[in-house]
Length: 92
Image 1 (cartoon, rainbow, N blue to C red):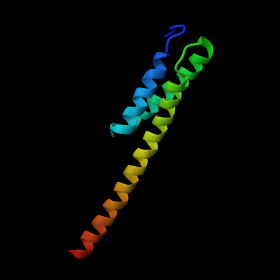
Image 2 (image 1 turned 90 degrees about the horizontal axis):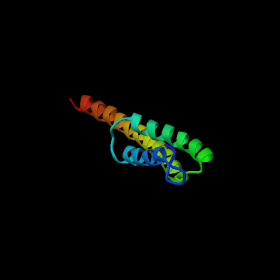
Image 3 (image 1 turned 90 degrees about the vertical axis):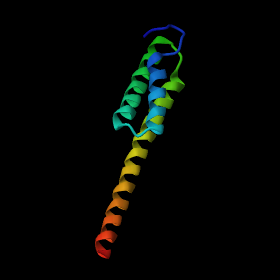
Image 4 (image 1 turned 180 degrees about the vertical axis):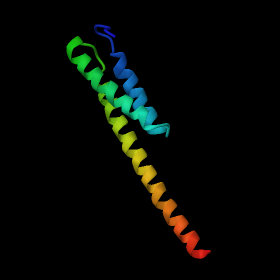
């Protein structure tokens, strides 16, 4: 994907997947792919002179935030679920 002077395609895909990982609770795979593609794109940009370093960084950051957000969400759901069923069993 050498566009010599254009924007690196992997950087763009990384950013889009990172945003998707923030917005939708699909799987952790989307965030992981965004992070991996972001690092690959940064390496390619360093040697090819293409643009898109900011896109790659955005993909890495949003991928990480998406994964951490999903982990936090599921931990909260687990805690509230356990609390709910504990109260439910206590009442009945």
